[in-house]
Amino acid sequence: MIHVSHLTKYYGDYAAIQDVSFDVPPGKIVGFLGPNGAGKSTTMRILAGFLTATSGKATINGLDVFWDNLEVRRNIGYMPESCPLYTEMRVNEYLDFRAGIKGLSSSQATQRINYALERCWLTDVDRQIIGTLSKGYRQRVGLADALLANPPVLILDEPTAGLDPAQIRATRDLIRELGREHTILLSTHILSEVEATCDSVIIIHRGQVAVESTLEELKSSVGKKAQIVMVVSGYRDPNMFRAVEGVIDLRIKENQRDDTIELRITTHDVADTAPRLCECAAKGNWRILELRIDRPTLEDLFVQIMESEPTPV
Ligand SMILES: Nc1ncnc2c1ncn2[C@@H]1O[C@H](COP(=O)(O)OP(=O)(O)OP(=O)(O)O)[C@@H](O)[C@H]1O
Ligand SMILES: [Mg+2]
Image (cartoon, rainbow, N blue to C red; front, side, top):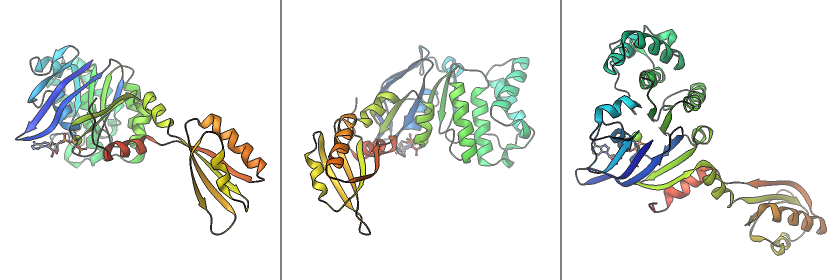
């Protein structure tokens, strides 16, 4: 649905994005991640037709974002990072004005405005002057605007930034629901949001794509590096666990106050090694107080990627 190929954007002699390529398949929700300044908003603005690229190509629904700019805009709902709202207008006036720009007939506009107001929890403030709305409510107006023309593709640049925790959760549910009808490219810094809503992720780092993967693949690649954490008690030498088959590395943390010891075990195969560790503990008369698998989170992976040099894929 969205196809990006070797996209590069220079601001003067600074490359904000360089040779960026990725695909967003139809009907999917794709998380667009990366640290501040990575190039997410730049890429999204190019896709939305608000910025021209220095080189490369991007198409949405088969339409070239440079050559078919107006047609592309009809196919997307774009929610920019900071919504350029007309602060002196009322919410309903603004949405009506935007519906006009998007070419909706007046009956379509009424229907879609009501829909968007309702979906974005704005019905109660529809007559309020935008300038008097809180930041979170303004964000919602931006999202309502993106939904107005019922576009097949939504490009949402940090839609939950500035929202309170309850609204973040509600927006996340809304995005998941919208994903049934729309293809969505979503940038965010909230990794739990990505895990809860996205089918796949693109991680951009220093203007280049560092990871493009489904969430499942990413989780399973992270899962391989899982550790077994075992808390045991007993006054014996815990180094005996090193000899257990499958143990690659063992880190021992002794508790100063009692005889409990935390063992962190790295293994290639958690399922095989855990029972062997239990057997070893039983033979050595250790008491097992806790046994758990510690899987690195998406956040761990993200930090790991950010600390490494980007290797474009
Ligand atoms: N108009 C501009 N002129 C010069 N440099 C710019 C301009 N817009 C963005 N940049 C630079 O391009 C880089 C990418 O910016 P961009 O806004 O795309 O990052 P981002 O990934 O969206 O970051 P954030 O998470 O902070 O929103 C940054 O280094 C930024 O300073
Ligand atoms: Mg940004």
